Length: 464
Image (cartoon, rainbow, N blue to C red; front, side, top):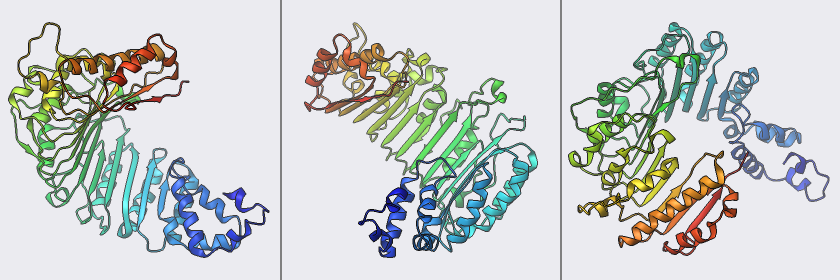
């Protein structure tokens, strides 16, 4: 765009004389196209645009809506840009993202002062900080206790403790109470307090921990009991990569007694990185009559008999239509996955990530298995589409061929049991798979078992 505007082509000068609203529209497009740039550099294209001519610069710097994103990182230049954005944004609502890890002791007072100063017009606030001293946690607590923001809609707090002392249970952090418009809350390495006024209006809740700390089940239940308007719930455990991760991973305690957990408006549930026991217990307790999408990423195979008894002790989630499953290589042989078709009998779209495509054989009857009347349930009679993705690029073409044959076997088993054909199947693969023996015949076989002749699609992954 910069080169285009400086071109001597006779058609180009008209852009310099275009009405201001046209110029602003171009700048908004430039701003939208910069979203993929690294944090702290989202204004690169707009700043270049302002160097073209004094008229274009004046239009840009006097349009407050172009300067509402404030991003601060460890780079000193981002602090200066933040000051500029604050001046130029006028009274517009702000989208603030701050991610700082280095020299936090010096920077934290300024960061918290900025958060307090802009609170009255902050619409989205994301803080990702690495804390090293106890008083830094205290300072953040005090800031949020006094925080008043009438328009805050989205709050993300990711506070990593790098001071050497890591609690077995996540810290409970005070959250602002005077945020009447707050609808989305994400907490990393911190736990929300039971605040009915705050939690009762949430539509989305994301809780993130690492493998060193866990969610206390009773406290988690207390928080969810107040989230009766919740539509999206994400519980994520991320692997810890720092030196402190030498401590053995904690296992989230699973209560033995079943409790009733009602979330009447929940439509999407995401659980990643926890044990089978955690998954099964939460599903066992959950009452969600509007649940439509479920994403499960299994990590630890520490299942017990309660998982296998799930289908006989709990009501299925009949409303779930989209099910995504991700499984590491060391969990693919577990029989625990057999409960999934019974837990979610009406799935229409099934997405399998990492090594989860191995589970296709778990959704088929075993050799010599008799029909006990539940076979049609285990086959997902309403399934319309199947997606298989695997990031393993090392094993590549032969592995991709195994995935394709697994899909063929699954579709053939459905056909032999007189179940409805799938409409489509999507496979991620390397392009070398097309050279493998039997590729063409397998592709034709799969296509022949799909409702749509063009229902098989390949997404070719890049090889490094």
